[in-house]
Image 1 (cartoon, rainbow, N blue to C red):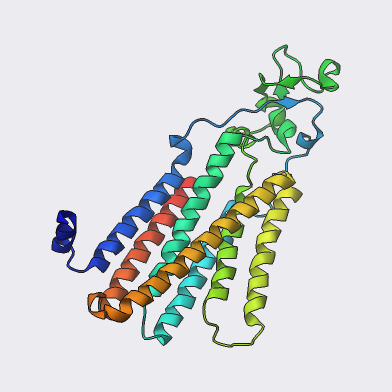
Image 2: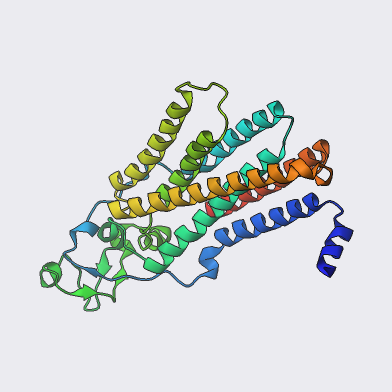
Length: 308
């Protein structure tokens, strides 16, 4: 009761308190997902068999780069969602809360996807298909897997050192060979694009009966699938890494879209009988725009930190 009185004293309108709380929590989630690797335990160092053919593929550059991935899976879907919801709000009595609700759940799901993906990568520590090409592992006796004494395999090696002089690998490449599962490209692409496809299904379409919506949804799924397939084609991941990453991203997208829909339904039901407690339209628009702007700014800033 006292806590309720304090909230009412500081924030006469509960909507203002919820907006500030959401922005604070979104910022916290994004920061946690950004600095997860520094806060979590070191990545698991897996061993290998010298005759493991699944780790003998050549090293290739990315078909879909990290910057391209973020445009495909985060920036473009976010801009499309913002445009869709803004047009819906403009045509639907300026209900700007829909814009804020959709974007906050999109950002929340993006942070959750990043956290769960990084947790899987660090805990499992699966070796990438180009492990031998990049690492050129040197065994405790000073030999290599290409030597006749080790070529036949049968021994699981857990103690080894990578020889960057032979492979020409950078420190970043040597760290990256231990985080194959799940595929980060696949999980992020499927999250952003499946969220977009499901959101298109949830909202009212301006042209009922048109094939425009299913065509847009098919494009989203095809684009996400291409990103996942490119990871196998580039020998960055095993097929099971891509499958797991795709399922992870799609599942989080489904949960986020479902949560956004439930929140919108509850908001509409509560606003029917309690219109006086809701924010005025101009205040709601300004508060929602500010909250979304802060969240997007934090998201873009932290992503630049990750890939700088």
